[in-house]
Length: 66
Image 1 (tube, rainbow, N blue to C red):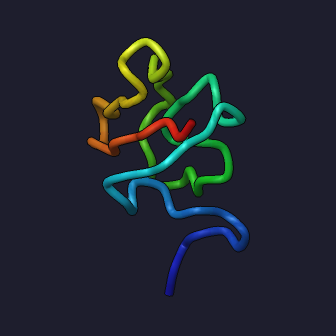
Image 2: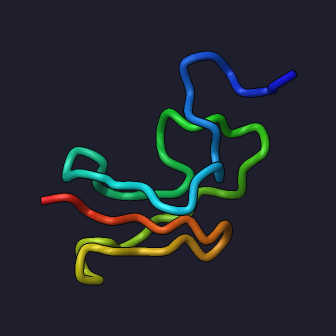
């Protein structure tokens, strides 16, 4: 049995996420992720770090698609 709310993405389930400008400002967990088992929201300065950022809590790696 899963505790993920229907229509949401399971938080911390993947190691790599591709994001677009529409997702900025980037934060982890992202909108649309199930939050019941996640960590506090942290903003990631992906546009200042060469288009890539890693969450310090869960290690999720985000890549900004052009």
